[in-house]
Image (cartoon, rainbow, N blue to C red; front, top):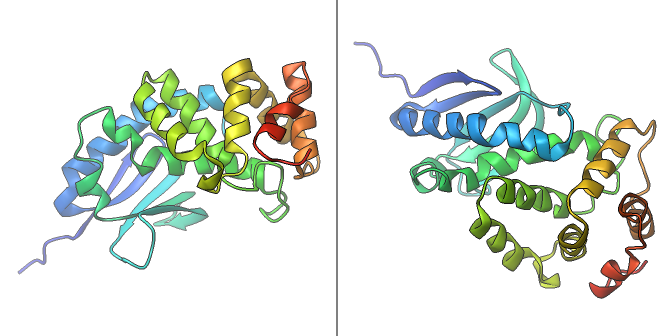
Length: 231
């Protein structure tokens, strides 16, 4: 008697996923919607083609691990890409929600990690740039994505959660205020500068303020000081 398969491999767009077979339909729907609706807008938000543009998605049942995480570049079944891992439960709690709610599931956010990872660590992902202090830039990227997708409520939820200094994302409040006053273009210019820089840029707060001030065309020091950062 043939044993029923437990995992279904699935290729679609920028993703190769190994989906638990019992969740095959909902898992494929989730990945298709993120790939078709969110991924092109993520590229627009970044401002250029991402260096990491293929992703491997796997699912585990391990309660000692977080709900989902980005695990760097890996090769799975001869497919190389940014490795995204989720708890199997996420297919029940996130992907079953009707579109576009499931865009706010972890697949979008973990893909954002992949988009920004080459800009955070260079070379060989060891030397940190100014984006790598915490996840403030990743979260702000998701905010901009939400606004462009018309998911204003979700962007507001990220603001409420991460804007307070107590959230642990030390730069998010200042970055939110700068984006709110000057738009997204300064951040696209920062990403472009990091991509084209022959060496990693300094990660301290004065350098972050310096670069954003150049791209804004105005001194933004006050936005960092407002949030208790030392410039």
